[in-house]
Structure formats: C-alpha cells, structure tokens
Length: 141
Image (cartoon, rainbow, N blue to C red; front, side, top):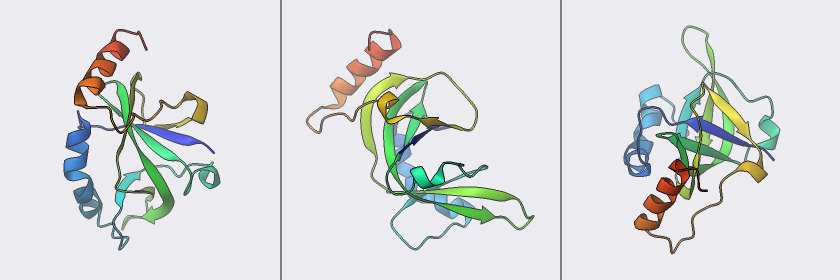
C-alpha cells in the first residue's frame, strides 16, 4: 500500500475543504453517480494498484498535512481536446490527522504508510488541533 500527498491549493482549512468538496466534481463535469469527492489531476499514478480502495490522499493546507480522505478508485478521464487526466475518486469523509509540516511541491507525491501522520483521536477537539499545528510549525512534533 502507498498513500498520496497533495497540496490543497486555494484552501486554507479543513472546514473550507468540507464546505465545497461536493462542488468540485460538478466543476469538471465528473459525475460518478455516488456520494463521492472527486479531484482531477494531470497524471495517473503508476502505483495505482497499491492505492485503490486501500490508501488515502493526505491534504497539505498552509504548509501542513492536516487531513486525509480515503481513495476509492482512480479513473482515467480524457477531455474534449484529447488531454488525459486522472480523477481521484474519494470517500466524502475527511479524517483529521495530527498536523505535520510539509514544504511546498508541485503535483502530488507518494507517501509511505510509516511516514503518514496519525489520525487525530475522535475525542480531540479544535483546540488540540490548533495546539498540535502550532507545535508542528515550531518543529516540536
């Protein structure tokens, strides 16, 4: 199994991602007929078989990995001009993770399971997320 990490461009918080996750698929005309979140990217992962149905995409916002979404499948898409893309079809559930600093990069990268930040406990509250994010910015976690 291998995960994916990607910058969540134009989104600063998990709440902002939650607020428009359902709209994105409609922007691209992607209709998978399910309650899913779709993100379109340029390249299909070569390690696709290691990801579909068992891995997650970890979102980087404001220089920090702060949440993930389970990847259900990866679908090829070709636009009207013949350009190929990859639709990342994810569960709509957004799982908060312990904040983990991540420098900017282009596109997406693979993320080994042992390098992925752990999920926040369900009893953690917003204050503990803010504290963990500040500790991460300071390089203490």
